[in-house]
Image 1 (spheres, rainbow, N blue to C red):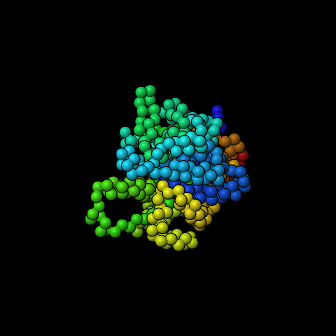
Image 2: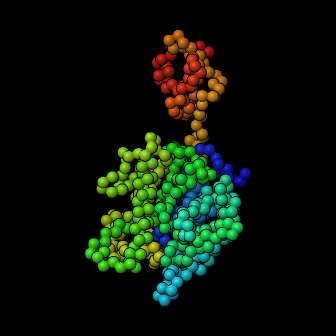
Length: 455
């Protein structure tokens, strides 16, 4: 079994990294990732730690898929940033002329993008279990069926056999094929079947957090990772967002082409909005954002009894108030220019702003020790079912003259009961009742309750 497969199937807490789409604003995500890499290296006392060592699954949409793939191949954030800066200039360096744009519909020639991705990722296939160091998911949209496709590298996946031979540069190219910017990518998905794939951001998955959570936990997918705030961690990284406040008078004279240009922005904003709502309802996050003035951070709202996961979200607000706090005094016109997703000249400034925001937003205390590598927490908790044998060394204890068995457990443990899962702390007692049923007894209550003990 390869190290990759061992990692995907190993027991213990699991860690997911989700990376948004956003064109060249992906440089903002890299600023956050650089800070995250530094913090994890410091906390683990390992200056060589890479994000592919820490995360069990890294996934992204559009520009996020470029970053996710580089990280999954074992690149450091600095190495990936160097590639990304080169890619940006080549991909969005030369726009088509007006006549070409009107007759071919896409704004940029796709050849520089394809060649740049191929130069960066080579001919590595999705099923390469040596070069790809961790779980990888590249999220695309199949235009001819309107369906969102998460291409992943888990060998037990339903379509792994066919997908494993696809070059990752081709999948990333598909994920980054934003309509009006680049032509769709045709990918062979069956013996006599091709699919037309476009940017995965034209879906609910521009922020891929929920898609990756479903991939990791739903029974139809192959990962089957357990849920719980001490079992599953998801860190979500954005590419910056700009709150729009259009003049209402503008909409009195909007023509059909102007509506067409605005609709993708409407859809992507809603997708990110609802992803954030759902993820905050499923968790109790130290980075929870105010959704709006009516529902707040959703701190007191839960869809389920217990938190599904540990969740962190980092994203840059490109409004003037936040930028001023970070030390950047920009006019509204400059901010609008900076928010463009296809302008290479913005890369340096966006990187600088992203680093400043990361220094304030990202705190080491956000990173739960439960998910640290090589920690005692990695050990799977002892779990007792009603069919388990009583561990050796149990003693007989007496309460109200009724003898029952008990043993002190020197690690955290869980007991499955008819009423649900009981959790025991280190030092608590596992009890076996008169009818043979197991339950947990707090060590302090045990010492106060049981009158006599005999071996």
